[in-house]
Length: 476
Image (cartoon, rainbow, N blue to C red; front, side, top):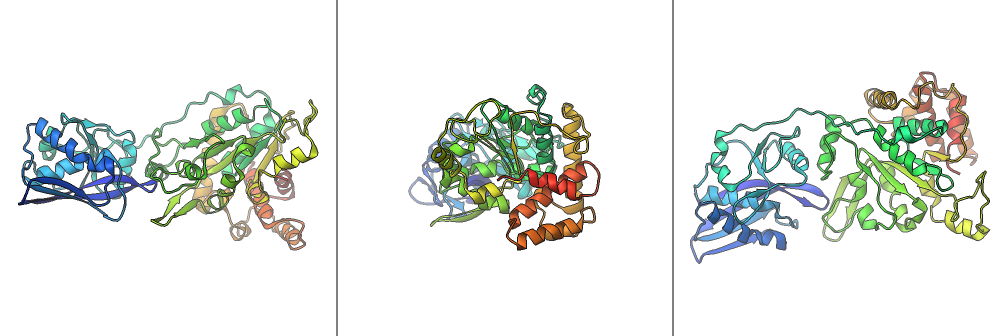
């Protein structure tokens, strides 16, 4: 046999993509060439593979070796292709037996034949699971695919004598450490509960030191674990997270549009890493307005399409946006305890950094400073009991998915009108305000979505009082 092929996976344009490694051995001058738009890291594999095979007491072919990476039109730039190249070469020279099952080999080779571990083993396992393949790598067993763990190239010879293993899916719960530190602020805690339960986008404003950042970081701890399907999707974008734990991505305000939204590089953008989790923008007014405005379409659509001259790809980016900011440059505009020192022009310049269309996409907005009274009619849950809160959020999210197939934050007006649990006269009243130009359509939709979450958390029909509370929390 002078031809063999193996399956591997490489990160291409922000997502793991299956790549077929084909090896052909032919007569002619001895040589080793790699084709298929291979970058430097991949082309250097021929030296690593040659040394690893020789140092593993195996025979390296002295004929002409051609390695092809398909699909050939996509750029490939990772050293994790080493193991697949070596395996295909050994199969082509009949030194190892070709497995009867479909397998995906991933790993970089050391010169002595050792297989180096991959940092994102679950991500490669999810990719292998999509291809109905067994993952062969120096990694732990995963719940996303059957796995064979190897540590040295010599172990390829005994693959057919081993049985793949697959772990059960047991989500890892994040530890709760910050929520108990938030004293008082019961109204802010209730708003956080509503935002998490319906996955509503939330903006917190207020003077410095009032606990806005701590509250947002504490919200990440209350996120319920992901169901298997969502966790599987998350791992496919190279999220190096504990199994089943929702992501919490908090970039610095100096990040570029290419880092946040995506560009021509091979790394997944931050909004894709936040898929099924939270994207937290602390000090949102310090971000570049050009960068922030590019979030508008992904927020609405739950995905991002990156189009460049060389490629066009669509990536999942269904995240919950949470942001914190000061109301002005000095931070004390509207404060009850301190006087704002900013001029009118400075305040206008500060506010102009957050565009109106982006501001409208926040479905909840809260000024955090003084403790606001919380009516028992709005919340009957003990907001200090974090375990109960997480169970409540988890149960309500499951209820939304089971009944409507999506979270409240993404419900359309047509879907809301079909619900029996909301006052249809109130919807007509708000639609009349939209027709008169007193209310935007997006504000109408946001108010109804939030009001529905408030009413259902309190197990009652959504009426005028819930809609009034929801409208009062709309950004202005």
